[in-house]
Length: 295
Image (tube, rainbow, N blue to C red):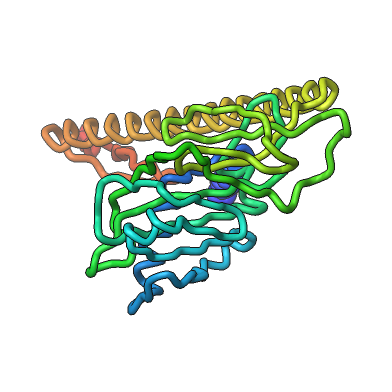
C-alpha cells in the first residue's frame, strides 16, 4: 500500500514539473519588474558616480545576453548638448520633466531576451529591443524611482540606430515599433535604413510581418501546447480528487470505529483484537460457567 502511494505521489510530482515547463516555455516576462531590479543593481554597483561617464552594469548570470548602460547628466548640459550612445542620438534642446538638477539615463539592449519580454502579434522581430528610459537623480542615489518625460522643443527627433538586423525577405521592409508603458504598440516607417525616429523614451525594435505559412504553423503549435496543458491539468485534477475521496472515506471509517469503541465502553466491556489497522471487539466464547446438577 505504501509503495503504491509513493508511486502516485511521484507521478503527480512529475506531472506538475512537466506542466510548469510548458508554462515557462510560453511565458512572457514583465519588463517593469526588470527595470526595478536594474535600478537597484545600478545604485548598488555605482557608489561614487561621475557626471557624463557611461557605466556598464554587471547583471546576474541568468540574464546573459542582455546589456545595460547608464549615464548621469546635469539637466542643463543635457538640454544644451543632448547625448549620444551607440544606439540612441538625442539632439539638443530636449527638456526633461519634471525639472531636476541631475538626471540619469538607462540604456537597455535586451538581446536574445527580447522575445521573452516583448511580443508583437503577427510580426517577427528582426532586431533586438532597445530601451531608453530617463530617471531623476539625486545625491543619495544614482537613479531615483521617478521617471522623466522628454519634451522636444525644436522638432528634431531622437534617432535609434539598429546595427544588427537579422536576415529577412527582401520584399519585407522592417517597420519601427514602440512599446509604450501602457502596453500599446506604435508602428512607424523607418526614416533611413534601420533607423527609427521617436519623440520620447520607451522600448523599440524592428519587425516584419509573419509569412502566412509560418503563422499557421505557430498557431498549430500554440494549440497543441494548450491542449497538452488542458489534458495534464485535467488528469492531475482527477488524481487529486481521487486521493481526496480516499482520504475522506478513510477518515469517515476511523470516525465510525471510534464511535463504536466509545459506545462499547458504556456497556459490557469486551476484549479487543486487531485485523490489519482495524481494532475490533472480542467477545468471550463462554459467557457463563456451566453448573453440574446433582441427581
